[in-house]
Amino acid sequence: MSQRQHANDVSVDEIPIDISKTQSGEIDPGDVPAEIESITRGLASEQPPTNPLVVLKAARWWYIHGKGGTDPVFQWAIEWSRHLATDRPSDVDQFDSFLDYLVTVGFADEKAALR
Picture 1 (cartoon, rainbow, N blue to C red):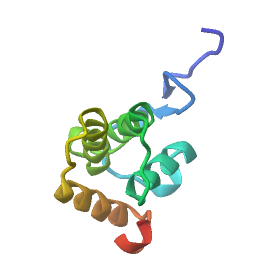
Picture 2 (tube, helix red, strand yellow):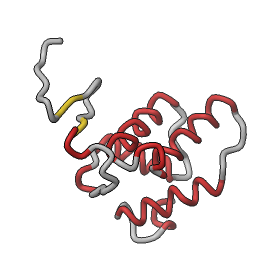
Picture 3 (cartoon, rainbow, N blue to C red):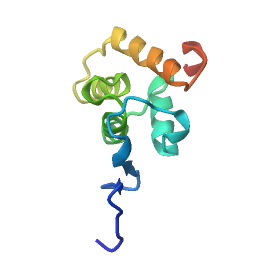
């Protein structure tokens, strides 16, 4: 590993993980890295990402910085990855919870703005 990582900023790729904010459940949209925000907004769009590795990258970030395994973005990203891998229909109720959470966090003023 050629670059040094600080104890509070660890990552396995270019997306930083702020150890001091892990599983705080308090997400400020300004703290979400641009790539993760883009993937997250893409998951809410009419044409979500179709690469499960990209989706899982966002899932990992939300798991670490959100509410862990109960974080709605994490749960939807996992559900969408499962759908991509198995081609089974995805859970509509889980998608609605995901959109509601994005509004609560501050990604949009209403769910319709995310679509």
